[in-house]
Amino acid sequence: MRPGLPCRIAPHRSGRRNRPSTNPVEKQKGIDVPSFLRIQDIADILIMTLLLYQLYSWFRRTRAMQVLLGLGVVTVIYFVTRFLGLYMTSWVLQELGTVLIVLIIVVFQAEIRQALYRFSLMRHFFGSRQETQQLSRFQEIVDTLFSLAKKRTGAIVVFQRSESLVDQMLNGVSLNCEITPQILEAIFYDGAPLHDGAALIREGKIALASCHLPLSQNPELPQFYGTRHRAALGLSERTDAVVAVVSEERGEVSLAVGGELHRLSSAGELVALLEELILPEKEKPRESLRQRFFSNLLPKTAVLLIVIAFWALITSRQGAIATVTAPVRLHGIPQGLVLLRSSPEEVEVQVKSFSSLTPTPAKLDIAADIDLSEVREGAAIVRIRNSDFKLPSGMVVGSVNPSSIRIVTEKKVRKTVPVRVALRGRLPRGLGAYRVVASPDTVEVEGPSGQISKLEAVATEEVDASKLVKGKEYQKNLLPPYKNVTILRDEPLVLKLVSRRAVHQ
Image 1 (cartoon, rainbow, N blue to C red):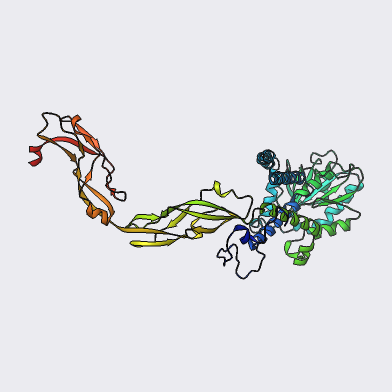
Image 2: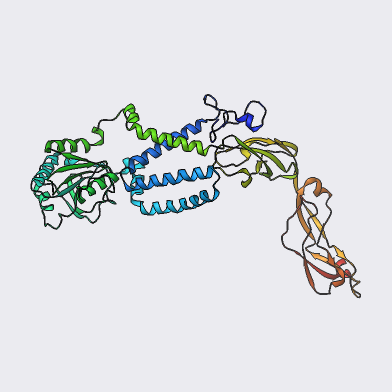
């Protein structure tokens, strides 16, 4: 067996005898999977593969992707150093990772916001459904762009699709006017106030002009691409927008989509691409499940292998069992009953870990929280269930010894009993005709019926009689007569010297 991979014969390694398992994690009804692989593990791998591939699709060809790759390398180094027992290096990388996450959130907040917007499924319900009225205007727009290319006039036109571009297009001048060749030529005329920037086509109108776009950070771009082309690619890398760009130096028309730049040779080719890319969703041909599954197979396979490798690292402690001592905590006793005694007060618990990310059982506050709401008066045996232990994800209870506890309960009753002042020594000379009395002289108690029936009085804290002074009052608390008996009074009693004759009167 290779180190780091889960063991296939977990019951033998844990030292338990061969017997039918009652653990739902170890036995899945109706699903035949290997003993070291749960159906939850398969779902875990598939979900993480889907999420990581979506992140790759959103961030590829962006500077955020380069940072994510660097962070992935640091993560791999962290797991390797932790596996090899290099405690100082792994601790430094762990602390550094916390700082890096905060820096990434601050530096790439725009990319993260856009990714979350793409991930939101509700945007299709609440987002504005844009009817592409500009379809009839495509020919005019394209003819204008190729006319500008012949004149060597630079231009950049953005076609908004489903995603919002509010956070990406900055410093734009609002126009909200109809699309005409004259207006487009006036916008991009060299020396015009709005020529330096991009024009936004939205809902069949020119919504904005002179917009600043984010530049692409792709290091593989040829050097002859200027600012316009880098801006067109930068916006297409971050959003689903389609960007047409006219080169001032070469007189070429190109189209940027999904971080890729396509050079176009004719106006008909550009019109066909725009109609294909900006059709309403209902008219777009839907890909079959097979086509979606096998498209981009190489990056999908790479992501799957990476997720499986991390899963193997994380679950390297699968099958490890530790025995801990857990206290028994009882709660939910019915109001009409009193718990007299329970045994035992601690149990031995075998805890099985399925992940190296879970803390060691010794660092956990493991306790058996047993609900007694269903018990009745008298002696009873309460079985300890696995659900009585609250464990973090990735850990399960293997066995409990003993598997039950014995409890004795009794009916709860109330009774009013007199107060007895506990004196030590004798009263000073001259106070023989006086006695110490308590106010009030009775108190209500509550507890098990067997103890309450034997209770005749409740004593106060001990009082030194030799130090009592006539006319002075003293405050003393009552002492519980039994462990399970409760005195229904919180305030201390008032003690004072009173003449015996006055007491009899």
